[in-house]
Length: 101
Image 1 (tube, one colour):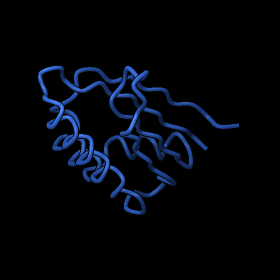
Image 2 (cartoon, rainbow, N blue to C red):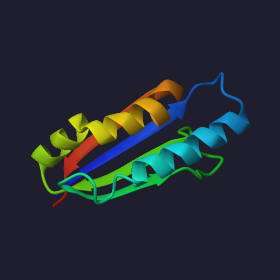
Image 3 (cartoon, rainbow, N blue to C red):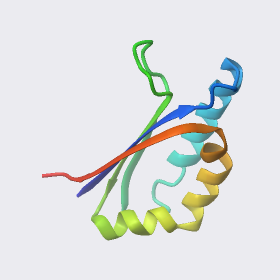
Image 4 (cartoon, rainbow, N blue to C red):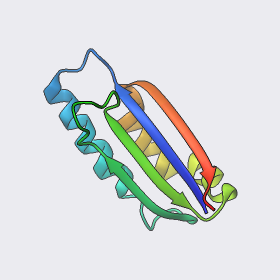
């Protein structure tokens, strides 16, 4: 199994209300991909971090293997959600992919 973890910091120019709406939209959009992309086993978006956090959102995905992760990255449904609900509002993106043992 391959894990795919993303941390996003939203743009500072967004108001708190806008950030809340972006986070809710990203969570709904990304989690709607569950069961729609082959090889994607689980997808969870966390949007309610503690005040000690320095990221606004976290994506946690499980994939069958590295090929499944690559397929997801280029899948039109994933890119449609990412382009509409995440990328335009993101200031910083960090990614960690690894094989679960």
